[in-house]
Length: 114
Length: 111
Image: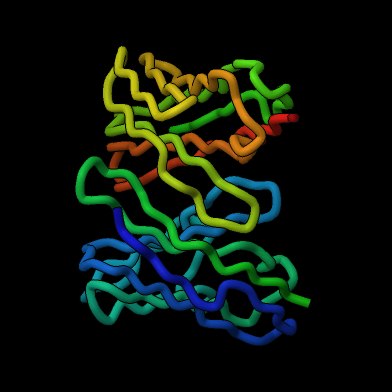
């Protein structure tokens, strides 16, 4: 299994500001996934980040709002830009396991936007 | 449209009272079905992968089974520490490389 570290674990932000979430994996992986989990909801995929190429965004998510970097095979960042209270959520980084396609997740970053 | 539905939304059990959680799915091509446990304030923790109908996996008090349309997570003689949200997810082959998650079952086991 992969060990995934996310920072920050939680933050309280002001409306209109931006926050960058970091994700570090203990092994090299091709794809990294960014999910959002709103209160009481399940996980929604924001984008898939491949090293060396542009991230692929899901319907309803755009690069200007959620820019992603993937500088190497063990690290990625997700920025939540121009935040509003509707962006209050848990943001999760995940990678695919090497054995059977299962996903492994970081502890999540809980954002509260005031 | 690919879809995953979990039931019940919430379940309260007495310690030792066995029960099952359901995950039904409608997908065009199934690569795998996964069960996760999520504790409050934490990321999901991987439990099981199932690939084909008839397959079963077990871990301690948990047993996952798979048919062509649904999966069950059986909890035998649960303990309070089994209290968590249990998520089901499918990995689909339809066009995009994608995992679809259900909304989860919130399980509370009372001592």
